[in-house]
Length: 226
Image 1 (cartoon, one colour):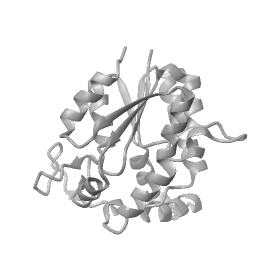
Image 2 (cartoon, helix red, strand yellow):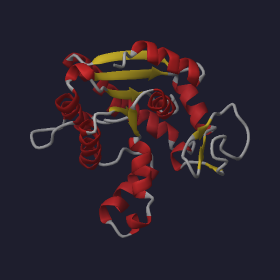
Image 3 (cartoon, one colour):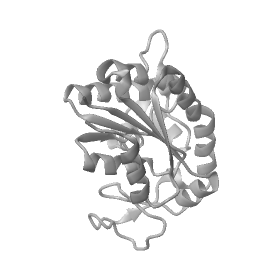
């Protein structure tokens, strides 16, 4: 039975990297909400679209985008992937209580995943790293302008190791924006994990400070794919 994996952690904890490693090892689809939103709000169409223009201002300031908008695009994508019988891996979403659990008019992503995958097949991976480490990683991070993959802070060079694309700095990794993102995670995202635990969703806490391949090994041991 396909599973829905949600990887949580503060900025720089390696959510996207671990999601990519899982998709390469298993028959899974990584829905990188952050990258998907970034592409949408920075697309040429965003200049002419009032909603995308509004979301771009929030995104570039490090503030979470409008929950109702994010909920719709993530829920629709989850249902599409489930119908195709693939595992789905979310890196960092749902990011707010509303996105996770919705309200009387909007079905939350957690309930939608339970409907299409079954609650027993939802697994949360919580990556823990100190805030100082988070700020350090984000401040030194570069992203490939072509494939979007990050360069480790311990690695030098101006080109991507995968496609040789030129590396770039993200707006989100500006030193002035990082504290805002950390606060957003503490205040708006972290409480979601506690609520899902109360619902009976499986929570796996993993130390995110070692090298990515070591963290990946721990995640694989914690998750049992069929």
